[in-house]
Image: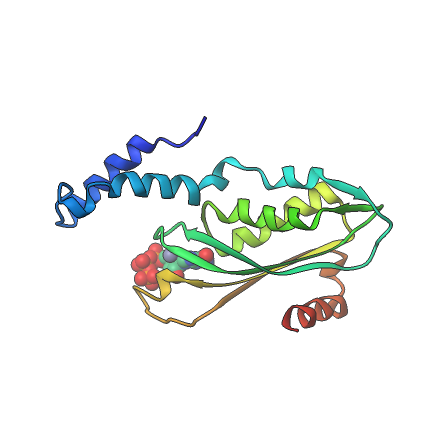
Length: 188
Ligand SMILES: Nc1nc2c(ncn2[C@@H]2O[C@H](COP(=O)(O)OP(=O)(O)OP(=O)(O)O)[C@@H](O)[C@H]2O)c(=O)[nH]1
Ligand SMILES: [Zn+2]
């Protein structure tokens, strides 16, 4: 059963429509509260997901070299304005003791963490920490690049401005050469 209170969202959307001066009983927006409730349930489903669960999938494979899944698209909602920010996440790690996870699990973890009211920095560090805890790798590096709608359609209005955040853990924190290699692979 869904943990989301759709009726409450519908009521809130009706109130917002009214508060901004629109008519919630106008034909065009009659179903809008219902649609928004369904949409919020979808875009915030990560609140009820733990990214660490994906890393229960572990293959015993003797590869202690870099694994990088790059250009993982994601959509999130900035927790300050509840408008989207979106971009790409790049997830790199160096497995240890044969603990290699499924490639799709890296993308699933990004998605679960993104689908919450979020900060870009927190997406970056939450994925890194989940991987460190469950995979116990030599190191992890996460790079996230995104455009924030709250900086484009309103406020400072700077379309095209990109925010880049990184989180580095384990041996990669001390290895600038390995970090440079990962960054050049991401850019390729
Ligand atoms: N660090 C960080 N800040 C973010 C993120 N998303 C949005 N913000 C910023 O959150 C800040 C909120 O600032 P406030 O001054 O409280 O809100 P505001 O008056 O709407 O700010 P403006 O956007 O400058 O108009 C803004 O500077 C946003 O750019 C994010 O993922 N990380
Ligand atoms: Zn914002």
